Length: 457
Image 1 (tube, rainbow, N blue to C red):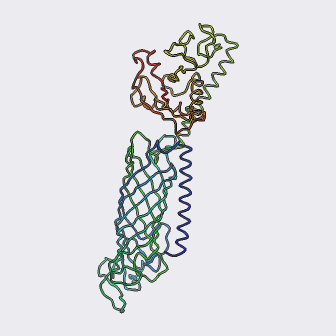
Image 2: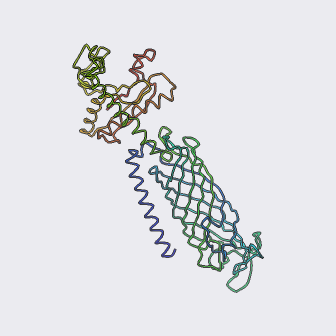
Image 3: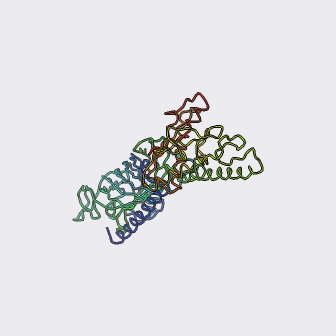
């Protein structure tokens, strides 16, 4: 490998590493850590090769671009990829196959190279590379997970190859110009004519684009096009010794994501939709609800029927226990609900936190929960401790819908704690749907109690 290639490779490697670490840092900020996602995948692929690529240019076997003709060869292999963020991943790719080409004048007779060869078949015994994979864009961008993902990749690898030059365009009659100046049968496997069948080793740079289509939570269809630029004349001896070998591959394959199905696939995770949901559901909507409550309180000065001095949700006109401390659970008459332990702001004397309640078919926090969560956030920050949030739903609706709803409720509580300065990594949010009811779902009173998030320290 010459100095220029080494220098270009070093620059490319530095750029890939920088973008990769930047993507990793962004993933930590946006997603709160990769542990909640599936990040490993393996793939199998197969396709064809051609000796040209879309950007054109000469090649080692032909004197001119017009003389160098496409001939299809087979190519297949596998990949192993680690996704570091929604933008960047590292992939190890291994392939093998054949590259075929032949020379002829499009308007006249066939053109031989300097050693009488008109066609070449290069066997790629193996080709292995480390690629940086950059995800460029998605569709369905308001979904939590995308169905389609576009990507580009660039890498550096090594390839073991062996070219065979033929006298005819039908790949028959192998010829070689030996060191004694005579023509004879044999294999050309180097820049110089040698009668050997040894594989030659060269470096190459793959540059490609593609698209992935999500077929299920585990399987994706991968379609890609890759241009490969070698640092050697992979088609054997040729007149134009300054040319380096190149070829393209068009591949299709299946990619299998590893890990628990309960975790989201980071490859198809949508940060735009996640950020939209975070603003729309727990944060922005909570602020809007809080503003509505403040407006209601101001209007209450001229409408005594809506006045609620202690903020317990029961109008002063019907409140039998005025002056209830903020955040205290009350019954329909405005009086505190009795718990086995003394309760202050939904917290018993032994540190037990009462469940956070939700309205029907809603994951929006009630303003009455804020004081409880503020106390919990302070305790978590002061003690540098962790907490588990278990979300539940009542029995209305389908089981699958209620699992999603309960997960959203747990994430609403998590987002409030994160906004209050608690580390995201110290909070675990689960959704269990209709499981573990604390009251009967046959009555509305029971269903109200089942719409909750339990706090476990």
